[in-house]
Length: 277
DNA sequence: CTTCACGCCTGTCAGC
DNA sequence: TGCTGACAGGCGTGAA
Image (cartoon, chains in turn brown, red, green):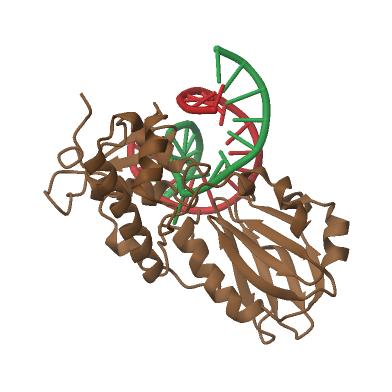
């Protein structure tokens, strides 16, 4: 569910609440979400350790623990991480609960149970292929027109699919890809290798604008997303195409069309984003 | 190497 | 009103 701006929002919130806390107990209520090591080892290796720092890489959260261990969490479609203080009781929907010795806790919940949790040594992060193969993130220096030009030239696939490839760009998901293509005036089925320089410049600016704006608004709550305190984001009010099938394009008033591209629901304005011939 | 179809799960909602 | 299936912020796998 969450894309880069949502995971960033969660990361900023949790950093203020869990860094420095020591884990007293780990309650694994749905063991199959723990991909590595065994749930028993996952628990025993974490108890007694302290969260030393928290970072985000694309849509992954990395909790650095004492002893050079790292808790890696990917929220997939419906994962959520909540912090609760010592006056609140545990949520019955929680799948994994990290209790601190101060009486508060961080709870992982996940309706569709597609999320993944790992506990690895710093030197073993390469066990998670999706993490080590990540491409540059929007807003980074590496996310340059030169990088995009070179990459697009080698890709015959549809631009939407290429933008969703985490090994090419880390952090974009379905909402922000649709919004970025809309802002850049590009049809989602354009073949990546047909983009000319001016279009690539526009697309890069559109991606950066949309991602930066959404981070400022604490992400997009289209249905499930909540931050670490249970609050909704604000960027859903700024969406131009995503989830707006049949509604007027904010630029030209044409009805937004929904179609399937690369197996994903795709929204675009047929007037502003012209069909490739 | 890239590209594509499919599977994983459960809850919700459009459409009959 | 009640049912049903299509679909949902993602990604890993295996086949072509």
